[in-house]
Image (cartoon, rainbow, N blue to C red):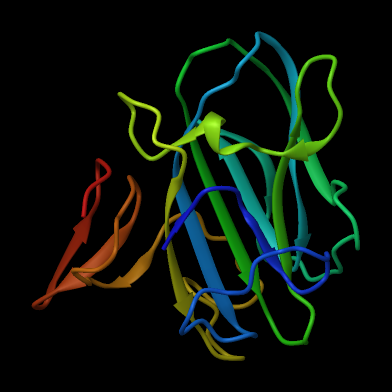
Length: 192
């Protein structure tokens, strides 16, 4: 599940549908890659989200509220955001985590306000899954959960990183923990 812009939901008109196979409630999604600013300066970066979301640039948490429940705005606006100085052309690692519980309304928009600009979805030209070349998308995965088990660690707990059984279809990031043939493994570098 790769994403060019992150604009998924049923609250804001024009948002994309959930990927095939993802339940409309009790799911978790994560995207990883790089944010490449076009200009140097102070950026506001955030989300319009229902329910919970984490947003990391490098190791800095601009949004750390994955266990939240709440409503998204019906137009592009921040429900949560942070500010950060960024340098044009630098590839900044980005991780976006989104968790949705029960209910029929879900939304996630990843947006920024560039220096001297106004709020906008982060364009494909500023995203990449590669640290060496710009390819216009972030790499993502989605997991379905239940009312008792939100991926990865349960309702009310704020996780950062996967915990669970190893799968050949998951792209893991540093900090992920997996079990495989009776052994426990901790990921120390991004890999699949």
